[in-house]
Length: 108
Length: 121
Image (cartoon, rainbow over all chains, first blue to last red; front, top):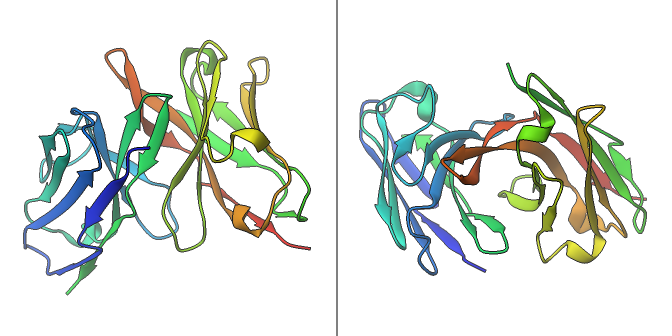
């Protein structure tokens, strides 16, 4: 099973700042990695797929990068609605889908 | 507009069977892959299993011996049955539709709002 490890567990920033979230895979997932945003009391929302492609309707301030085992989600300038929990997710042979443990982005 | 709605009992006794249904509106259930995903209270996401557009299934190995996912295309619904439940199965259960990038349907772009299932006597 491929394990995804996200860091940091919690990120405290202010609106307008840049956020950088990391996801590391225990073995290569090529570019088959997604990022989700989950707000309190809501289902997750797909933000990024194939490591760097924004899903429909996702603002341009969200960007993804990386391949192999190291991936990054960047939010260029935080807005109030961006404070949430973010998960990375991959699909491996089986298939087996796994998620990282999440990064909580909180207001400083 | 695609909408998914989970339904089923909110309370299940230990050792009994958890049964949930996901009703799909706004798209052909036969054209997509569908998954169940769960989230224990205050914790992260765990993929449970998938039923493909062809009706084949794949399950999380950690749940495989207790799990059955099926589809009823006439009702535009798919279902989950998890046997011999314990308190560890207490979670918010989501159904989700897969998003395909080319031929790879590796992601989840439509989700239900989730239904909380508590395992307790």
